[in-house]
Length: 552
RNA sequence: GCGCCUGUAGCUCAAUUGGAUAGAGCAUCUGCCUUCGGAGCAGAGGGUUGCAGGUUCAAGUCCUGCCAGGCGCGCCA
Image (cartoon, rainbow, N blue to C red):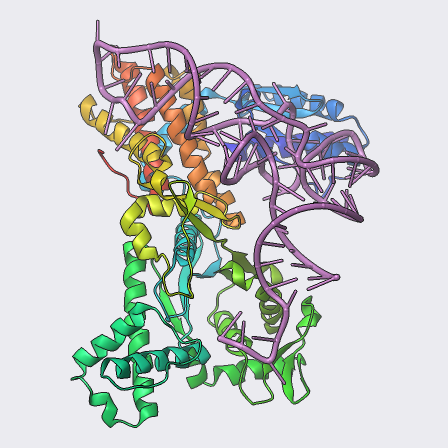
């Protein structure tokens, strides 16, 4: 529908330009969108304002010419009415027959309604969570998981080829720290004193892992090995155990990854040296003070960065560059990373590295998912990683439920910090926004069951003429465009917000109008509208990873 | 000190990226159940968008300067 209006608008502008003897302006940008206030119409454009500079005419005059052109089309015009308001905005009201046809399309498309080919040709790797396997997932990771996964689902629905990926830091200093922590606990449990590493991991789960090693490996068998071998074994065992834990949390949260990309394999394949070679060949590496540097300032970073220390060791950046080169080499033409806020200073240097490797800057998206503060009885819940006593993601979803947890995590723009009200999330009542959506879905499901009549697309949709009905249809019509916006801006919260609107429109419609009534034709039309609403709610909730109950 | 982010109703947040009278939820108050699910609906109050300038047809949004808060600033990961 929108595209038809767009076409007509373009033709009108062309004719206007011709009559003024002006060139058709090439880089003209303008909006054609549903207005904030729906009383203005179904679609609204600011094109006259944009044209007025170029054509040196008053916006109102331009608007009049365009409206006249469209009105001359008569029956061929896709709009029923065009109006000028606010000094030059043009508001269009669509033909209601088109709105009715929309319901039939939704009915026909079913689960596919909302999908588009907007992202056609985009092969996108989405990297998120990527928590170090040195401890359980925290609620910070949980939010990244919910946001990242929802985004993957949305990107997929809008036609992107999507590859969710988890970067597994299974090498480097933190790994050896983990290994030595487990080793120390292992010995401790056997009554042997081994000094606990400074900055080691002190959580109880380390002791748990040590305990399982003792149980599985016949008590003290590790003691027979040379110590470095035993420590290495502890490390490997611990990573496996941690990842099993992490993966089971992710599965419970309905978060899917295609690939766990191991940092260790980068070293094994010589990928780090390879990546540095690529940079060296392009002239972005130099030596200074005995270290090897990457000239990231060529790409807007505020200082150059060391990639290989004077000791010969790599910095964290080096394998990361190699990892991102591998994304490039694996053929992805778009890259999305979600990181925690502690990494935000790291963005410029990695972006610089990606550009140096040849990624076009517009294909690189590195977003920050801000922290979550839990509230219980109005008080923030203290979290401290140092003491080893933190609220894990598991504790959270077991207490609040996966549906509420996922919804709360995604309902706000990800780059603003989130207050998570535990009491509210657990409440099975009107205040809880998750239930508001799910209730709407359940209500429709039960209604359709009650109606005892199959929903058919053959209905006289002109009968749906009340304000509440038209508002609802209009709301449903925006689903595909809304998903495209969420994709383009990489902001899943838009979907959460939109679904609340859908539910509100439906509840209003439901309380104003009796759906099953004596008028058979009207009943048919309203049932089709109800079913279309259910389809949008179902598809939308599915994209957020939230269940769609038939009854509650 | 330098850099980045944030500041919108009592609270938590929106505002289609420069568009029309700044909107939702919660909280407060007032109404609505003999009929399809009241986990719902209708209505009311609540704002100098941190402050002061500037840019233009149009500024919560852009530019400058202040004020307040958060984060980052290793040959750490």
